[in-house]
Image 1 (tube, rainbow, N blue to C red):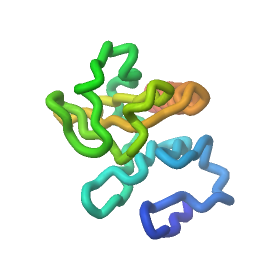
Image 2 (cartoon, one colour):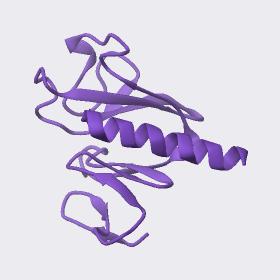
Image 3 (cartoon, rainbow, N blue to C red):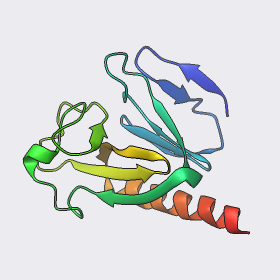
Length: 131
């Protein structure tokens, strides 16, 4: 996969056939989840192999309260959120993932379509390990 650097995050080349879904907050490829504007203060991306993801949930599924979400960084729970200044808007849903060998969960803004594609790509990646 070709990677090009933008001023805020590392993005897959839009011509790459491996990209399954991409928006302002994350990109899903056949093998990776790229959470954009993850690290503070550099706003660089976090790249996670789909095979290392243990679970994928939304903040609503987990019953998170407003104070368990943050625009960027870690609130009072063990989740590090990628930057989204509008996260506290009612129509924004956060995806919370657990990664092997990492106690800090990762949170980022997601939409319904992106969530379906991420879960399918994760399932496909896990099935390729089993096969």
